[in-house]
Length: 174
Image (cartoon, rainbow, N blue to C red; front, side, top):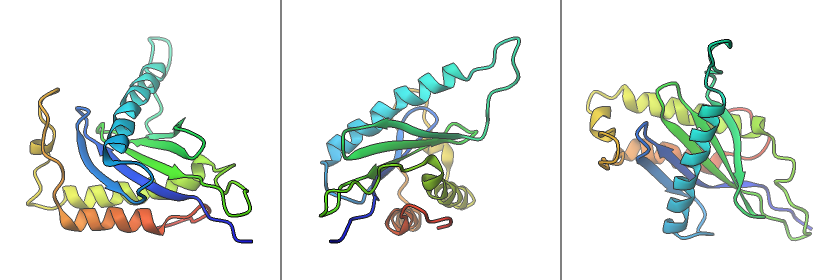
């Protein structure tokens, strides 16, 4: 009677002009096109939450922690979590909360704090990429609606994959 643990199925990084910068598929439960559409659908949720937390003339500045937590439950198996940096780059992590052999859903009760170490590690990997003198972030953030290059760094891709494969609920640091 073994149960499966929740795991990361997909990691996507969206540029500040809503262009996909990087995608990593860790579980083949959906096609690349389906994951791409899922990533695109999260943009609307990020925008809605940004509008709802925008400051008014009578309120203080919005929360700048970047933590958005659960964006939406995709279906009975997948849940999308999000994080936005103060520069507008967005990280999306899709968690597979599949049931184990005994039918108990391992991801039920998954908290935002369970996914927080993933976002910290992804942000650290992204900052390390930005510190690379050969990486030009401007070529990855074109004017709105004009596409752009995806991140092609093998080291960054390997680090994102390592983060996704190492994470399990309850882990405090990656």
